[in-house]
Structures are given as structure tokens and as C-alpha cells.
Length: 151
Image (tube, rainbow, N blue to C red):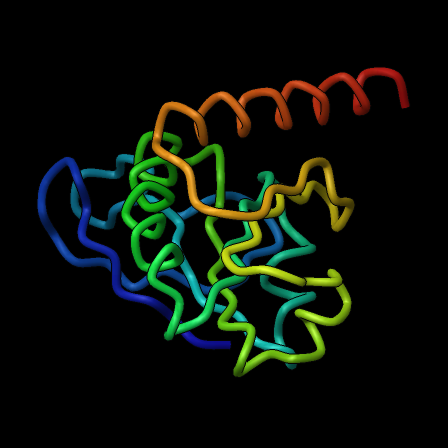
């Protein structure tokens, strides 16, 4: 699996971050603070990248030609940075990953999903501002925590 380069928001050093990890979350090799975990996935590696691991996953199903997708991307990256060590952002280009788009019945882009252990906790189509996305994400994560405590 590929590695992505992420600049540490704390010290500015660039780190290579794995697309998938069985345990833990990425930390800066210099200052040891949690790093934003932002990676891309496609049809062949989606399961390993987005459905396995220790933290919930925010999936951005987007397209290169989609203006709202390009507008919401910085907001999603901001949320991933705010929640470094607690959340993983996985970006999926639906044109390059048609099986993944079909699996999640994507009818509009962007489509956002929150996954926990491969289970869809929440779904939203369309772009939104950071405060709206933060509320939606918080609600989804709260539902996920509630499910884990009752299981």
C-alpha cells in the first residue's frame, strides 16, 4: 500500500503516513504529536484502507470535475487535522473507483460517509461548511460510541 506525505501541523516536518494500519495512528517522527491521517483509496485497496483500523473513517467520495467536491475538500482536511489521532480521512475518486462508488450507491458527489469497523454510521450528499460538517461528524461519532457500548 502507498504512503502519503503529511506536513505536521505542530512542527512543520514532513512525514510519510501509511494508507492502512492495523493498530494505532500516525505520529510525527520529529515532535511525536498525532498527524492528520489523510489518504486516498481505490477499488483495489478500499477495504484495507477504510474498513480496518482503530479509528473511525470519514470517506469523501468525490470527482475531479465536481466543483462542490473541490470546495468541501479543504473543510474535510481541516476536520481531519482537528481530529488528528482520532479520525482518518479517506478520499475516493469515484471515476477511478467505480466499484466502490457502486457499492455505496453514490448518486451525487460529493458523498460523505462515516465508517466504523466497516459499518456506515452516517451518510451525507453534497458540500457543506465546516460547522455543519463538524456537527454531522460529531453526531455520527456519538452514535458509533453508543453502538459500541451496547454491543
